[in-house]
Length: 95
Image (cartoon, rainbow, N blue to C red):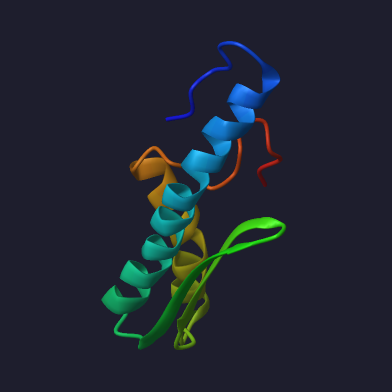
């Protein structure tokens, strides 16, 4: 999804800036869809552009057991992978 720099280092920055909102949307949607599938209430999804960059959050009910908690937490990264729009920039540390 990210284009390579063509003329200058600024091209790469622009590409990441354009990519970031879509990536955050996919990431937060992943959390929301899994919460919904676990029959947890989803009360809010936030996607905002702060001075430090794009940020997001999903407010959902607490999962009852560890398995559901792990699924809920992993859903954002999984959605980014499925829709080829990871929220982390290339080369970013991944656990």
